[in-house]
Image (cartoon, rainbow, N blue to C red; front, side, top):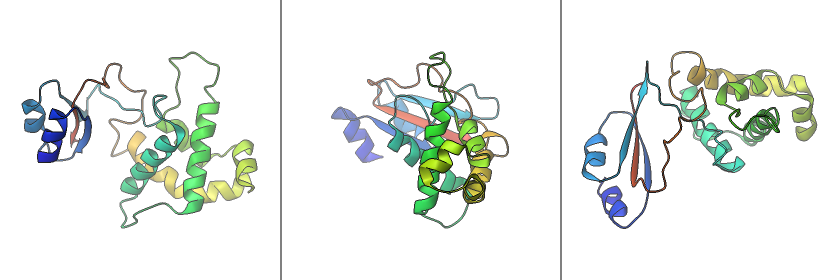
Length: 178
């Protein structure tokens, strides 16, 4: 917390996921900071497939979410899972290419791509669709927890407009209600 406080004073920006609500006081102490509260009934959403992030960042973010939602002691996805996740993200974006700019790929679309991989995904991975279905099933179930079931509440819709501002020194994502 001390490093965040000092970093903000030096012009650095910070994003904190706060499961216990312990960073709210710090945000109050740093002018211009924001606290976003997620959970049941919240109208604040963050899309991990937001167009402001490159594909590798999106994959890394969704991979960490997947590992967390799996609830296991795993530290990473294996190379097949990571590659399949990247193809699902690419295919999710492909479905929105050339459409209305307000239409964006979201996490539920990635879940659908993992449950029902496309021929393009199979070609890119040089495997069959059936193989990809089997490989992606556990990841899809884990991510579905974040979009449709017990952990739903912050990642299943497009990013709420105005959340991210380059001048915000500290953005706290308070997840106590999730």
